[in-house]
Image (tube, rainbow over the protein chains, first blue to last red):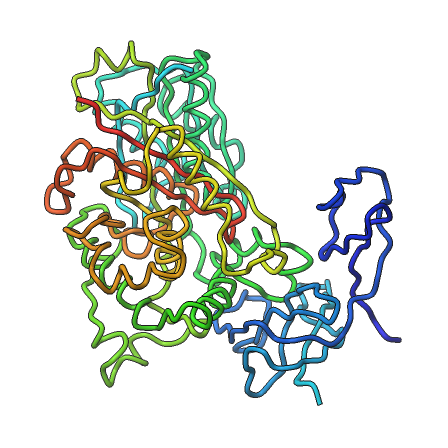
Length: 116
Length: 391
């Protein structure tokens, strides 16, 4: 099963939002269920990144890489990276996987790799 | 709107405090009441971020008002992340300015060292976006690191500039008896020398250990009053002349220009406009340097320097004691400490002390106008305040 992360498109003005919000940031459409979910693209450009070495106690690894990626449709998102030598501006591709395990709760998110 | 004056101030050491949170909050309140000779107040605002999560205490304001034997005065807690302190001051300002109350006590307290550093970092991280940031393991240090890399790429800020902020603020804190860190540091020790990587390891690259503020317990208090009350208090007269607040997107990646801190810019504009001043009128400022990069960027966003030139002003020494606009004479969050919910009150305490001319070795000469920037979230909720000495 291919997992997706969704942006939300305003039914009134077409504005895309990620993450989800209740009212459109462009036209302030305040109707209930005002958005259509749209899968986020998996390709994009790495804008910035870091290797974080002080993690919350629920992580069982010594460090994680985080980055902000501008996706093909212009939406930006934060994700984890699995890239040996990240560089600002490099092309990346993402897949949805487990990014955090907190007790019995498993959280999925986007994990980016260097584009081939 | 009525004019609002700061008539009394108090503060604890920012360090590790082995007392119940309600007593930590009450101690500077007692000092502030002694400072101005007031024995009763109309209302209390208690700023705090982590009482329920870190200290296991809810309804903190009820505990504080009773600890101070100030019942039946009204009391409420204000939680607005790391901007809780200045938010509470703003609430107090509105209560007095509107005529609802004549004297209000605003105290802020945090006891973060009750838990270990990892838990404290995770507690603060819960202010990030729960779905788009927090689940990935995002912490405030990691957001600051990614922001720093963007700033380095765009404006030429270097690790040396960041280290210069740390050295300056550690030096300033040496003259502040309430500061958490009384530890002078050098560029040689944290950047250039052979031991630098050991002394100053990477925490979240490009940021290193000395780019971050310590995790502190602490509390501070201001008492605000109407002109009629202030006229009877025999202390140097300081007016809270301007308040400003603005918000930005919860998730940092959504911002149109990721190197802008628009909430800082907007809150500062409001606070200065209300006071009828411009950035060049400010004599002394306390900016929210939880991370060294923030002092540089906030100094631009509040209007002291042009966008992208804060690090150049730092190089010229314009932000150090004796410079054009001394920033963080207290040591800032970087060295004075950052008890999150109390930080805005700690900043106000320092500025009022400076404007009263009572800052001793760290006194900024002839300071008449002071400014604070209390930065909540990663710039998504910011409160700025302008203070003026009136003789």
